[in-house]
Length: 474
Image (cartoon, rainbow, N blue to C red; front, top):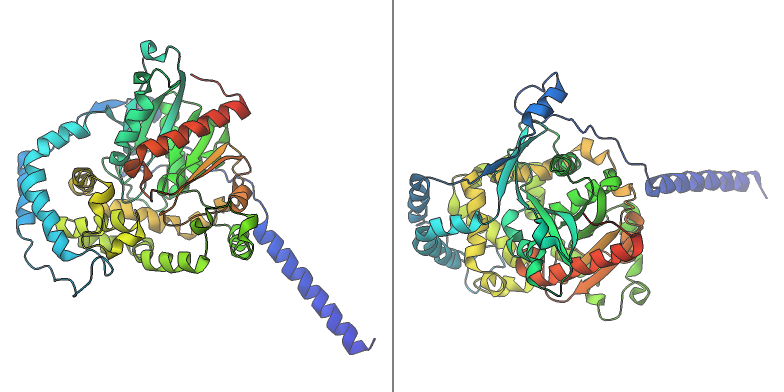
């Protein structure tokens, strides 16, 4: 072998070794980072005596938040001024975004039917116990439903933390809450839950921060502190959208507190997972149960759909305050921006319908309840900042997607959700993936759209966790 060839072989060997080392480093599991459980997010300076702060701020206050007539009258007046909407193009339904002809109909219903009944809707929204408490300097709102001793007889009793996402709110969970908390009405059902449903920081009635850095990992710390504040040191978690990511972060950072993590938007965005997804397309029968291939393949369809539907994501991850300013005190714009997601994320085929299919799967009052929470609390900007914080360098440097989450995990896939991940991808992140299901009907907002299906899936997951891990009830 000539000298030149030997040098070339040596160079290739060194280069191959470097590539292998870099790839293995990129794919390797990492230990969980340590986050400060006392990190301060309030407007004022952090108290020097944090223990004293905890003692003085730990009170949980019951709330019945209401809005004066003048606030509702002002909203009605703003809706009266909807005169200059640009007509849709000929033959266009929701393909260009929210159809403005249908938007006029929604505005009329909101103004002339829904708002005159606002006090009734207020009573509906306050049907559960609302509370606030101070967590790491931020006033945090949550629903809390407890089971009394008389209703525990013959039931298996656990606490569960429900986590919403954007553009949702605690309102998404109302029907689901009834199923979890009032299962004592069904003598054949052996499960009943203490239910905690917080508004995420900056969402609804939960205070947003004035400091940079409150990303999904830090929100996970706050949500765990809330559960400890309420006396729950072990609990189940259920969530989708941001609730999926934050719930996963809680399970990753504090596995000792989590009985099980159940999500209707399981994901794993690690480099190893994404590579496996591309490889699996060439041999789908090895990775997907028969009959569910169209949940995942062809990947080109999924990528095209993500490109079409992720414009909002890029804006909110880079310029949340700009779009927030455009939507603040602009109820019509807010309605178009939020309700469009409840159309296309429920079923992408609804883009071809002139009404976006909004009332095929939801009641208009339920959609307007959620919209009113954003409008009345002026939380659109603060809610969208979570996207920017997720993709800030400090958050990405945590590499939580590469930290294994070893708590029992359940994944419920709904066909029309934004994205799907294979078990072979999820098990890198969730080695104890003990429950994996497929539902042909349903989309991104499963708790609101198909609460009974989600409830059954969650109960099946709890049963599996009981059987495999011998957990204890309250």
